[in-house]
Amino acid sequence: MNRFTYARPADLAGALREIARDPGARFIAGGTNLVDLMKYDVERPTRLVDVTRLPGLDAIEETAAGGLRIGALVSNTAIAYDARIGRRYPLLASAVLAGASPQLRNAASTGGNLLQRTRCYYFYDAATPCNKREPGSGCPAIGGVNRIHAILGTSEHCIATHPSDMCVALAALEAVVQVAGPGGERAIPFAEFHRLPGDHPERDTTLCQDEIITAVELPPEGFAEHHTYLKLRDRLSYAFALVSVAAALELDGGRIARARIALGGVAHKPWRMPEAEAALAGQPAEAASFALAADRLLAGAQGHGHNDFKIDLARRAILRALSQAAAGTPQSQTDKRIR
Amino acid sequence: MPTQATPQAEPDRVTITLTVNGKPRSLALEPWTTLLDLLREELGLTGTKKGCDHGQCGACTVLLDGRRVNSCLALAVMQDGASVTTIEGLAAADGTLHPMQTAFIEQDAFQCGYCTPGQICSAIALLEEDHAQNPDEIRELMSGNICRCGAYPNIVAAIEQVMASGGEPAP
Image 1 (cartoon, rainbow over the protein chains, first blue to last red):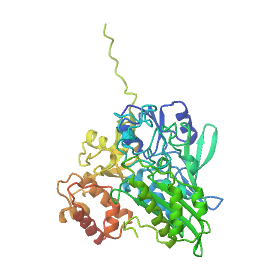
Image 2: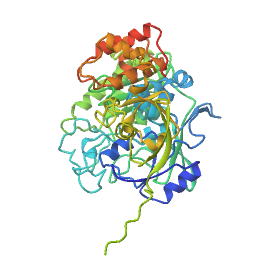
Image 3: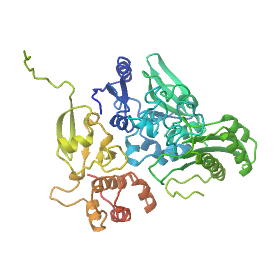
Image 4: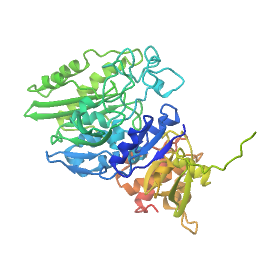
């Protein structure tokens, strides 16, 4: 790990001042990803700004709109077991419990979860080129070992995936990310928070270096009746998704009134396609409709060799997730049998 | 001509207080010291193990203000004012083992023993959290602790034994 200085500002304004005066400074909260990356020399901050003592960022509160506001310092554990989230946004609680381990969830913050970096092997290995770590150095995953890599939204510069489970649920729920910076506050719709690699794979999100996440807001609609988070991975627990699906439906009789589908493990961001969701509206909640949605979501999916299997796996996962959601039988994150 | 060596005040060190197994300590730390390295290298508490050092194995699990965390990913300077309990802090002052330690022995819940301090700290927190009611849930919520010897069935049995006896609060 490189040498760095340490600051522990007392309030948000102090934190923003600290980050603004040193382009090499980074915020740290749970540290479960940043400290790990520092041990690999992937991240080499000159200064760490400890935000864990900032006041007012560690609560889950009702919003005027009828949703919930999750402070950026709320731990993943606190989200997973919050009674209001369990009742109104069970999809989110389920996705959080599908990720990491109890130890990591205790330490990991909400804001930090959104800012997780990819688990691409080459990104983590500072001895290899990587356009995300070292812009312009190349992407060895293309034509290399790419079993865990993306099949959608890739660029010629990067085929990495976004690793979070929580973010896949937040994408489906259309959460809003609240951000503070030197110019004041702004709200970023979840779909615009993470970005595709394009020509700048070094940028995971649209957050600026001198900005900080203060909260994630959930809109009132939580799809509590018909939802599922289905995560497929190499072992049953404590592993990143090869493919995951957050599905949320509103049913009207046997027909779909509204649908949300977000995919994890397949792209540089939680993958949604509003057209595919809109096309489900008015359709019967049955396999044929789900198959059409899967076709639309995966149109343009492209394998890179080792990860070719993900295209069919994603298709099957979408079908299964939509049928679980329609039946009101969400995937258990304890009993891993997929029904 | 050699310049005169001036003693440096080690400007990079940060002073914190930390209660370790009930004993308050004042520590001047380099910011890059992890809680795990502080415990093992500076305080001589080598019961907490370094396995992967990347949050993937759970061998370094300790109780930080009662919550289980991977001490390898926690920077010590950030824990100012906190209370840490390690495997060395579980037994009573007279040497009586914590019920979870006793259960691990009685159920033969380890082979090489390297993951055991982390397993025991994690298991104590699991009972405190009270989210596991059956073996499936115990297994899922112990998934952050890897045992390369594969003693999992006996680890689950040890936890069930303490659970059945009504458990014991973490110290």
